[in-house]
Length: 595
Image (cartoon, rainbow, N blue to C red):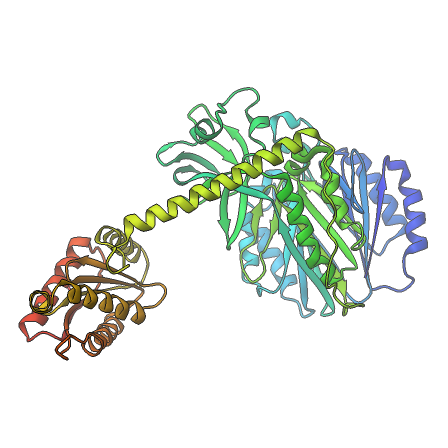
């Protein structure tokens, strides 16, 4: 395949553009996709360009949207129309436009299903959406989650140059195909071909700042009312000293909210706020989700881009499409050229600045809406032509904007001090939660874990929780006969035995004195009894006393039921433990409890 990018300063230049393309285009091909990313939201002007393309390149399928910045071969072009032809030797392209003023998202998804399942292999899906449909995009992309995880999905939201001071204006954005326009719709591009390889990756460069908070109130999927029971605007007031007002949004552009999606850090940019302190963001959240304030580190943004370029070099693309968030351009300003020129020497490239980016992370099923990211989509038909690059020379970063040097220094300072504080907090938390003698969790920590896991199992269908109480037999006699040093060594040995018997998802703590508690998430009664018997046997074999005898332990076992409480679980464990004692010690007693 080949990618041919052209940039128009005015619609009248389309004829010269087509002259060049027809001279450069291979004589033989199977399909052509023409992408238009337009700074001009005048549909008459776009139609003129589209009609010229249809007249002279009738085989081309056309797909496009309005943009807030155009990209061509590593350079930012403003107030232009980006015309990009993707010419495929052996692959096919199909374009679907859905007007969501006439169709629901579910109906649009149902319409596209037959084409997703057609016999020719699906190599990837590109999506362009308008701002009016962006917040409901998941209703469309959820259908795509059933596709095999190796099918890449990528794209972005249309944007506009108009009225940037309000941060969002959905009236001036649209998507279009060969025939129609809509400012409330979705455009899907299906790439078919067993020899077509598409690689999608992304990076952002935003870093977490401040303490983690929990979403405790929401309205809809993208409006957060409370964090840690406080109005969300208080997060910006507390950490940044920025209060809602006339220049609120320009002040908080470098400070998104950070969340995780499929083990990837994702930014959420604020787009509006209400008098009650709630805020809307450019993406979805979940109630109870943990979030942190983030900040923009220019060095990280550009270094992440250079690191991403290594993967691009090794893929050896024949063409690259770029979907970059407008916030990156607004934040980096003139220094955005440092980011874009990374792609210049890899392959012909084109793209646009979006309001939001779409990506399905490799190996996962869901398609996620991103903010503040750069999504790179590489195309290649057939095998790589040359060997992968062993070493890719990174470019020296030289900033044009003097404020970037100050921001970079402050960002580095924040990054280092945040890391130091997190390390100190982790050390303090470890000390607060750890029993010093055995190195296990202490009672307070294991009690919190047990309570949390009981609540979690109660909310999850068919998810049981196993718990084991361990008590050493005649431990007072061991201390009185051999001394407390021997008793302490017995406790440490028992702790190692239990640690060695557990999975990485299990927990064990010292409950007090010679008693221990084990918490086994997702464990049924039969398996919990097996674990208890294994621990009982190992304790009786490995705790050798000075006179050659062995210490033993009695164990009580139970599993949770619906509606269980901490007191209920502990009560059953205590009963079973003392049943084992009454029956002669060195044994396991178990109960399922009331069902």
